[in-house]
Picture (cartoon, rainbow, N blue to C red):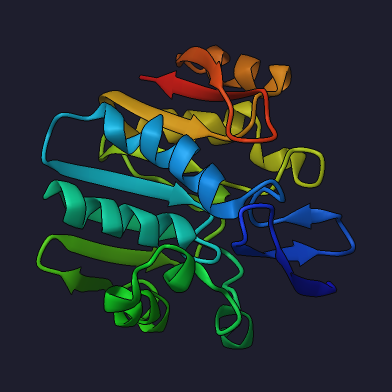
Length: 219
């Protein structure tokens, strides 16, 4: 599949899949989207200091890196699991500008370590941040009552509708602890109904720049 690096509206980069006309992050701002959807409406909702996170679509590592930065700022302990079936290639990662755009040069090696660490092995990124990257299809997830928070960042339903079904959201529901939440940039009615059908209580929330709404689902 043809791919290229593009600049989004907030100046941060993302990867565009030309054949699908789909991006890893919003063209309206990759960093803005990640901070709004996954930090503001996800991570910031927790008062506890230790949080287990599952990311569906590890991709460029942007969400993991922003979460790491937030953990340093707020003194959080994060156990982070990122699931990705098709890892991003090093030549693409080298062209991403997240470290500079986040003014995080002091943590440049952390971003590199996140991508250089072995798949399917826990890596201690920092004293308060453990990362496990799992090279796995989303359909293969069988975790039970493990996570406080899920970042659901799969490619859109228009190109991969099979990832936004009751089957997948049942796995997400089972993966969460009671009271756990799932956040996603999507606001499609079919997605909301699929979440509700497996037991989630679903809220429509204001979306990131360029998007009117997003969804947050609670177990």
